[in-house]
Image (cartoon, rainbow, N blue to C red; front, side):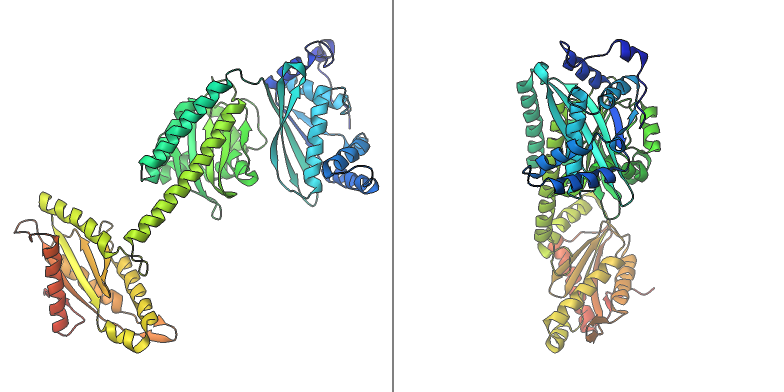
Length: 523
């Protein structure tokens, strides 16, 4: 490989790692100028390292030591020299310093790359196909950190290893205040989790707190379905986004093929500096980022037992300085708390569902139905609104149980409940398994005639096809009683009386021969 051309200013003003303050100078350059490099046909190097390891298995102990020794034996060969791509002249300066030295220990940056190369080969020797890691080195007496990140893509034909150098960062003198700042944010998020029963309210408040803490250009929490590669819900800055907003602001291709996709695939935090092309983004994402003049970006996967639930993305303002190490730590901690919150509200939802739902039919149970119906009835009386109730049951259900058994009877109840739910199109309707084989529907409806028509459609729709519970086929019919209040005349004294009127009508339908709606209203 030909040696990269050195800029003229580099040859005349070379920062020497051995001169006083030289290490700090190199670190300062690195802080300003990320490096992007890659190694083509890395598979050959891995194979050579493996062969060298086999030859000298007795000389060194431990995988890392064996790999390091093997690398030192093969890395000086010309065919294993790295190819380097420079984002700008200053980055080229550092990259050239590493390559020119032949990756020897005489160069600070070369030592960093040599250590990084060893880590890469260790991963590849173990057969890992994708990984992403932050590596830190302390640089001399200045106590600065050199931060490098790598990602490898390993295939049958070639292996490409991308290396990016990021800022050198002094350990903060205000670490105590940073810890306190982090604890305050965690306390607020924890309080949100305990003080609200709504996932939406928790997520909107949490993303708002993070957005305010970072004073960011934008903060996004996206909850995803990995199998379908879709964003299920998204919260931006302080509100939940609609499906239309998600499609416009977070296009699927930008999300999955950009930094968020990398964070999801690697399950690692992604940091992308501002104003620097990033090989992990597609061209459309790069153009959008440049157009919006975004600052640095942090993307943290939201994980629960290594399952990706979504991502937390923080986009810095272009006027802001680069994110520091503790900024990434806070973002990762917030992502962990969001994951805990999702588990908490998921468990709460399941618990509420168990308390409020009839587990056989997935309809509201009687107790929860009565609570909701009391509120609905009270509003109707207060606002003089029209309200209707349908009480229905399965004709001769006891005979079905006696003849075919309770398991077949359970299948009949589940099918009836499913058909009932599909035929009631009014979203605000309350539907309940009221008692045994008895079902109740409470809804706003304009007239008794319309209520009768709906009840008769339900009767016909539910009983139009038999219920199959292999090998048994059960034919069934439905009887129903209705009651309607029109907002003009006198109201029943309370909800219980209102429901009782519908129950009495159901008994009349049974007495008149079943398979009908009572009171019958001629068309």
